[in-house]
Length: 145
Image (cartoon, rainbow, N blue to C red; front, side, top):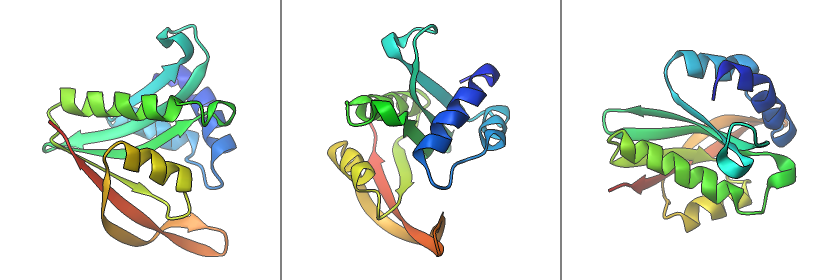
């Protein structure tokens, strides 16, 4: 992900989520040195953007902060491929543990992560904004290597 990708990343984010990250959240992630990747059709720079992820790696641990596939491209296997790439990046940077949060109401996300070998290790109360209040997050983990 580069600065010139941010408008398109943010457009995908807004279309996919009720409470999206701002373009500034993505810019801050880039500026902080987080591992921010976009995934494109055909893998090349000229392909249309399928999705992206933002990953924080430190002290042997990777924390997936955001993963999204463009709404028209969902349920075609792209989420699995984006997740697999985030795991590759994490391992390449020495992470032995990979964690993430997912909404309890996000059945598709839970299936994706479960099929990839993640297991629930906790719950963060009132973590996500939600209509009428806050929603918990399920904390999932997968050991790497």
